[in-house]
Length: 147
Image (cartoon, rainbow, N blue to C red; front, side, top):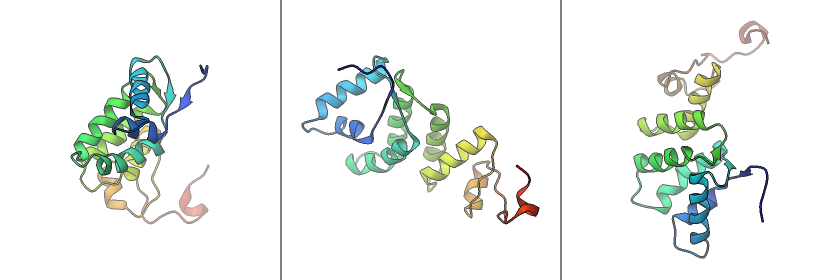
């Protein structure tokens, strides 16, 4: 069976490749095809976030740096498409900053890419990432600017 359009990459296709189960060989072959660019799949930020959480629980020896290495490797594959540049930035921020949540790393990366503020009360963490963080939060026409 062949698909003309890009598919969506799910977390479990990656996780099975890191195990020894009934799906491992098939998932490893699929990931190898993604790496070569023989197959294309769109990667969603939710999948990268889930991998950042699940991989170190599946592979106990993987620390944050090792997980980031796997994620950055996957994001470099020819067949992986989507908001790759923003995800690479997010993974690098997450890897380099102990305690920084992946979602905050992604928001900081996206804010940098889009030159947009982040509305949060994690002011210190996001400002440390270079994000513009209004504090206090805007609450109406006089503080939110025009659209």
